[in-house]
Length: 170
Ligand code: 5GP
Image (cartoon, rainbow, N blue to C red; front, side, top):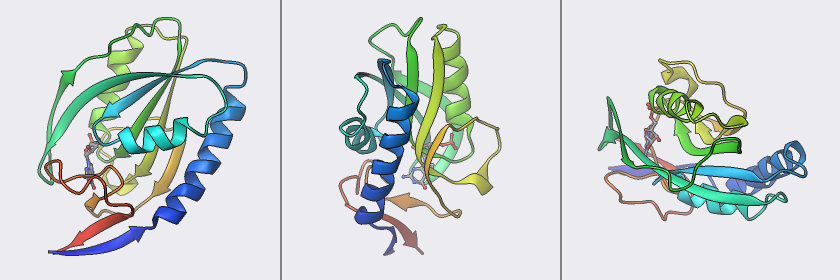
C-alpha cells in the first residue's frame, strides 16, 4: 500500500482561513450552533471554529455508513445530539461528501427539529461519486474519486492524525 500526498497541511490551513472568514461574515452577530459529524470532522471543526469570529456552540453527532473503505449505504446514528437545535442557526461541519447519502439523511433528520437555519460546510467534496443531491454552502476542496486518509480521515479509525490529506495507491 503506497500513501501519496493529495493536499498539504499548508494548503488546508490557507483554505480553513478563507472558509472561516466567509462564515464569520455570513453569521455576523449570530451564535452558530455547530454540529460536528463524528468522528472524521473533529480536526477540521476545531481548526475552523478557532478561526470563526462569531460565537460557536459545539454539538456532536456520530453517524456511520462506511465499513473499511466501502460505503455500505446503511446509515445509522451511533451517538445523537446532546443539545436541542430548535430555533438555532445550525451549521453542520462534515469531513467529506461522497455519495451524499449520509448528509442527505442527516439534513432531513435535523430539519425535522426545526432549526432557524441550516447550512452545510464540508472540508472535501467528491462530486463525481454523488448519488443523492445535497446543498453545500461551504466547501474546502473538490477532489477526484480517491479514498483519502489523514487530517481526520481514517481507515478503521487509523491514520486520522496524519497532517496532510493523502490517498492510497494500490
Ligand atoms: P457518503 O454518505 O457521502 O457516501 O459518505 C460520507 C462518509 O463516508 C464520510 O463522512 C466519511 O466518513 C466516509 N468517506 C467517504 N469517502 C471517504 C474517503 O475517501 N476517505 C475516508 N476516510 N472516509 C470517506
